[in-house]
Image 1 (spheres, rainbow, N blue to C red):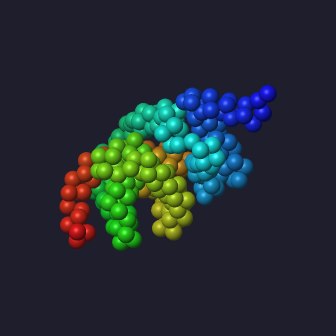
Image 2: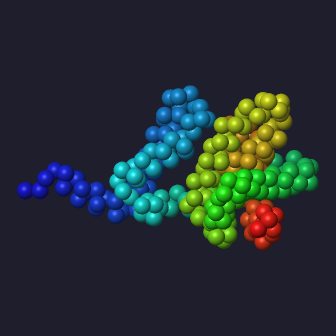
Image 3: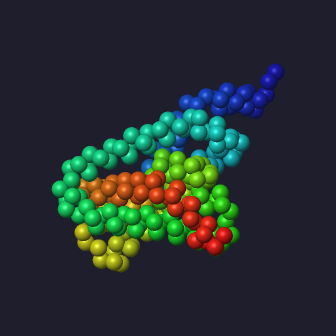
Length: 247
């Protein structure tokens, strides 16, 4: 007669082979993380995505499930990141008059922000002795996941590592942004939103919409500019990066 433990193992092996399990698990864990975050007062330190990451990593470790198996189920959510990013064009269109009036300052600050985000991270990691594959995984960490993972793969980095770094960057940006905004006495919602989208991609954009629709629209613009500039310019910059590093 089979033991209860063996039956549970067999059932888990059957369920684990289904992509639907990990899709459902991701959605359930995120909903639970949202509830936890609300119960704790909505603290940005305990961002729902960070809580979800911790819970899902623990589940994968306890069940000895590799990332590829998990991603087979969760890839549908990953696919939706692209359409969600494109949907940010709606608030951009609604604020097109303000954006047109500030076009050149936005382009210059967008380029400066994207370059600083990539170069500062790479140089710090290089000085700490990181390998090339780590540097290339780190370089696009300040843009939205679909773009960051594609750029990372093209540069020879690890897309899975880049995805984790993107999430951490966004979460840290959301934690630090309110304090920095108060410290710098920024009153203009356009500046708040653009800075948050540029530095904390989708996380910052979601938080900016909590400030105002205008802040959210300019955050979407910052996210978009950072993504476009990183996708086009970072592969070109990599060609002279070894020279800059003295290698």
